Length: 305
Image (cartoon, rainbow, N blue to C red; front, side, top):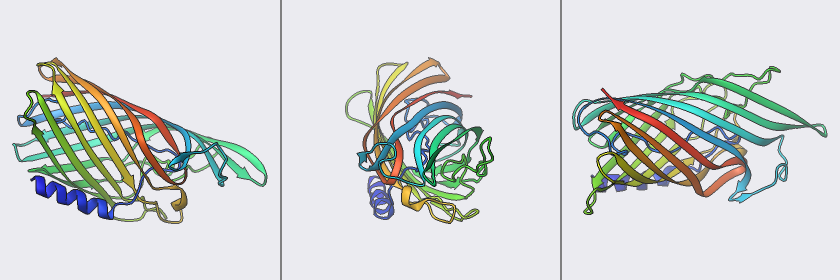
């Protein structure tokens, strides 16, 4: 399994393009799957609900921070405030097979300045809408599934202006999901580690837009302090290719980021755990000019039944 995992990492890195969105449309990359938190390993159903907060307000070009409007664009992106709810139902049939279905609710506030004939016109969007659902099956460490076009991709603001496609809660496309996952105990007592690679490949265009392909690489360790508390530390890399199509902004989409996220989980009852993570970026690179985040926070609750 280790050799298969290493080969998959090498293959996906060889073909991956870099990540991020020009408008700061974002989800946290923290992995909160059932076996990462130190939860339950037996077959059965699990429900997870998490809330994540990401505010992107730092303009960046390449790997350096820039001032707002320093590199002029048709739109100068100012900020995007993301507040997302993500619900996941997971069912483990046995030690080999499992299935998860997740669906997000996206709450997003975005502000940019429209540069038009010497004028700087502020434009804003504020919406709450369902995002794209995801169905992911797993078998002996392999993951495969689909991201479905369930989210809206035609939202407008109060003045009737259509939001940029990278800002919309849904992409409008169906994407293939392929990956591998492994987790093991370490020789030290109560210490374990995990690693996961997940590649997301858009299968079609939708109304002049094709999102960039995405690659997520997660790894981390967990230390169990006892029957109730677990401490966790994750490293999460996210890479994304440039968006394509007449409705896309290929010059200002795509890049890469590496985040470090310490966290903890607590067994409130025998069948319920709560958890929290704080993510901070340690390296970021963007194509063109984009806005990035200083930090991201996740809190959630998992229950089995």
